[in-house]
Image (cartoon, rainbow, N blue to C red; front, side, top):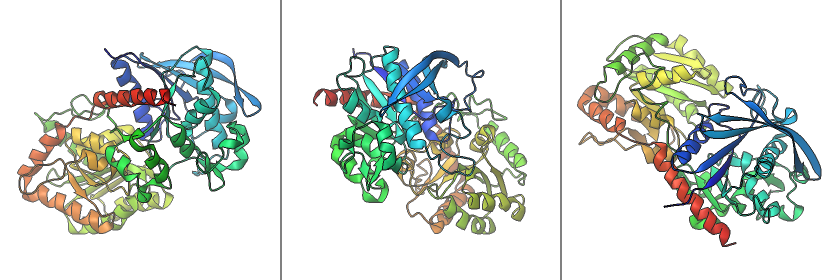
Length: 493
């Protein structure tokens, strides 16, 4: 029998407390899957202003707690709760760093100027918390650049610590496009000694690179899909990190994210007007009609709907969709429903489309969880034309809802969607490779023509899609293996 592991996860986000993207979903689900495998996990997060103390039964736990940053001792408090009554979650409370609107930036999407200090402080506070509560971890699991300094902190400061000295470090890269690159004037505050500010460690063209430092020092590094792991070993996708990831060799791997089927499953979804299953799809028709009414579309059961739930950003290919969507509506019998926010120019463009194409395009600028569920349930297709996509979750949700994905074959989109075979009807969605408006146009056209000309294939694909299983159980087992490899690597130092 494998031994139980003690794991501390450090993250800037976690559902249901704070979320801007898929990172929060992972940190909200993976710890519980690991506990189900018999491990002990704690999670450490910032106590942002948005964290609802009453809703999440967030209680004061420790005050004060001193954290050394460089030659300065900072003070904070710690609150605590339990996620789904199983996983202890600790919140680092600092009025100086976390009591503000926004997680990373202000209302105008300008990064907070003290972000390097905020998240270095979070990371050191998480390690200090382990010492103060005598939690002796086997693994310190850091998520993205915000927690990446955990690996160098362990190596530089805690190598002989009675609490942290034997802990191995794992760094998960959720999106390599965000690395935490900041001016060298912050380095003294980090307290990592100037001898480590070198081009092979933390220095990046005269600046600090949090993610680079984490990659170099971590005992294991992973990202969130096998294809993205391959892509980020190349200069095209790695944003300068390819040499360091390639240096990790077999110690850099891809593990596909799981999804929480207790929240994203049409058979149990309480947020949709009618539940349904692969055996009885009648509820999906009711959801489609409700979606058309909600977005003031023509209520037509025989007109296919293409759904979008996304950040409105170039990375997500929403500028490419913008260049194609009007031509598709003019040339095809199809409707579009768009939910998202982000780039202000894209918000303005998509926000105006319903006025120009009434009954054919519906838009909601912002995020609304209930509408996201309705779009997944009521759409016939779900499009994700990403330029790159580390894993992606909505295409996996779409599979379970029998909403066939239309995706660019990159990262986790390529790993999770099986290409439609027009000869046999096999497959679970429609893939294209070229990141272009024409690639989107012709692939949506292919899906729409299949909807009208080969409805038996659509039904066959829906059944295949809904039978897919991307639960966290298998992903958690893969993380368990990464943890054990990290421990072996640590022992070999």
